[in-house]
Image (cartoon, rainbow, N blue to C red; front, side, top):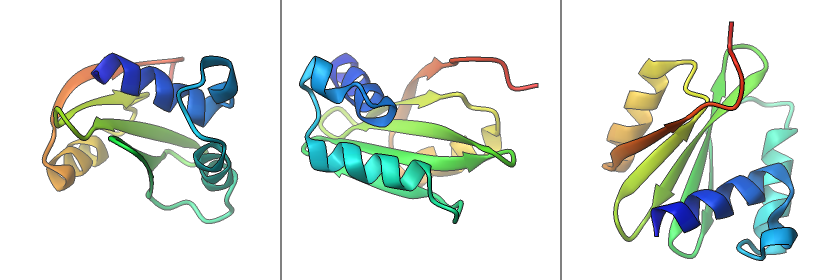
Length: 106
């Protein structure tokens, strides 16, 4: 279940949702609007049994906390600011099981 949520979340956030057919168009549009917002704050995208929290990182990036609501497991994508990650994990009361990096952050 977590893997399906992770793939669906990644597809939603990176614009490939229709290719994998895991995410709805309105969630994809909501995620895209948050990514390109001039205001950089933490945002939550919800869909069925999955949540994705977009966490601002550094001056121009985001980290993504992917949460499987049923299992209460989570994955983090590009965790460049660990303190923010720990705070978000505690806030949602989930178990962080997976760390994904897409590129370097230095």
